[in-house]
Length: 132
Image (cartoon, rainbow, N blue to C red; front, side, top):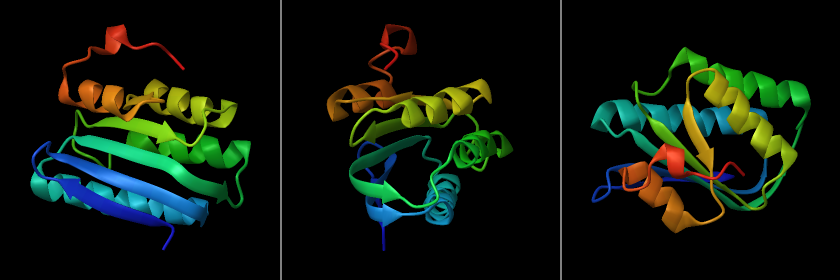
């Protein structure tokens, strides 16, 4: 499986670990599984670790737009925050986060897991974030 989902009960957050080669359908599946956990437990913090991601098959501008804009369907509870920690920050990752934010999703990219957790927990304000 190209992803794993874990729950940190202490921090009340959901972790999605993406690895190897994946495709848009698997990304949607991972997001939907995390959304179910979020709804069941009431968790509104999600961190996506992509440090072990090698490739997304079928990766295209249309796929980026469709996936990012699908967040407007609100599969997660209102107010959910998403911290993305990619293997490397690229134009595609920035575009995905920007489109998701434009559709009302609280999503930011981080190079550092500690800062991501600080932002998710509320000890780092959105206004303090540097746009990557």
